[in-house]
Length: 509
Image (tube, rainbow, N blue to C red):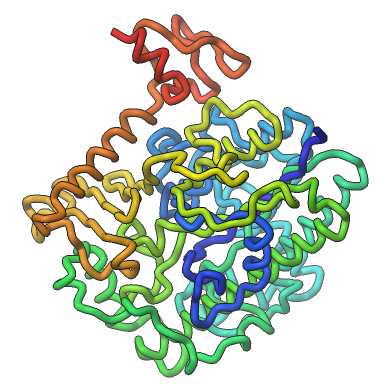
């Protein structure tokens, strides 16, 4: 078969509930709804980290955080760790990445034929290209996604919301669409397959959607989530979550009148909802362009997000502390490839690390041996049954596990020594309590479920952790391995045990 093109779209901080197809009472997402109706929507897609950089690294490398080792923002180049961009470029694809890439320095840049980082202080190039574009049109002073003008020279981001000073075409999303369509047009004209990554900065703050997306919504009609106001202490929520809510309730973060928490959260929700519609429009423009060139059956389109967002759930204004909530750990995930997939909603667990394994399989490429994910192709083609037993979101000292109807959060025992000297955990029945307002962890009748989830986490960590060396039998050599004194290792100088479990169990000491 001819090599299919790949259009991989990420947004930043998209709460999976904020899709009209998922029954949200206000948000309008006609383009994403249409894309899902033409393809496959994964209802339980789990992100590997609730922070931008580590999550994006998992999407792009296919590695879990405990293997790639990044838990904070940006950072040095992870020397030797392959990306999906380089893998596809080696297979004859033209590769490009535009938008909020937000990865370690020169990691993505070196594996792409064209690259533009739109957000300042992310990676190496900063937002130089977009800045030049705005300067050429005399609009640089109106840019209000990096920071609101109301902050003055500080240029900090804000949680408050208002209408943008820029039209959509000149917004970061509009610029991403321009660069993306130019790249697609060029590759199509040259007759070469493309792997294009478009990373849309919204709906992350600043919550400043352009028109008409701001005016689509009336704050008087916006519905607050059912868990926006409840007794978090009685529900035995995490102490840092309660503390964060108290911080927002005190105010001081609002910029516009009235400067109350009640009014401010509605403006933020207004801006967030409008920003979701703005990225929906951007996705629609990209998809329409692909289809207009007659490439619908020749292009695999994937939409996802790096992590979710509270969007006023639990009374919280921003996404932190992210490990605590399904609102942050679960993300939208949509796949479309002409008529090749069985159009449906999939409830089986999927993870962002699965993107690399799945897209390589669909395109007929060998999988990345440095990747940890599973191939979801069977689910895309209509099969049922779990491909993986759980989905894990990681912080360095805490982990969230989604399995079946439950979500469990493990914390290192001394995480909250004053409030919980004996240790703290979280357990929710997502089916019965989708807004996570009742922590079942301390209820005796759920002790077996909590123990099973903890065992699942242990099994996951043991199975997926990549060692630098092992004793006795090594995995067989391949083009993706090199011999380093008795050990065949991958490009990241580690060994993938997951791909060789049967061999290792049989031959290990």
